Image (cartoon, rainbow, N blue to C red; front, side, top):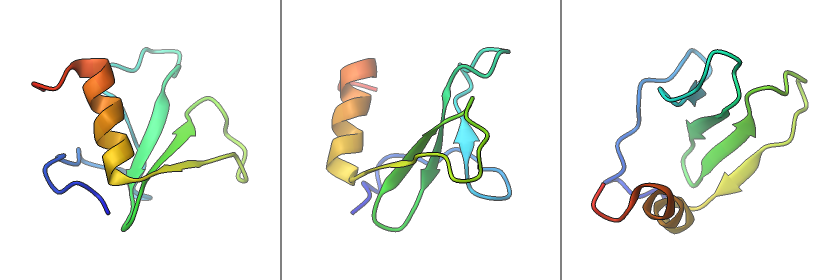
Length: 72
């Protein structure tokens, strides 16, 4: 289940968004909040069938804590 305390940024028409820290070359990941998971994909890979990783809410929170610190 998704952690409701993690705010979702505005998403595009299909629900995917990139970080505001993404550089001009597009070297970043795209994220989409789904019902039971957070979906992650490579923003540089433009194939229709590109790989997507699904992460549960607890895993997403652990990832965010690891990269930003638990106080974020």
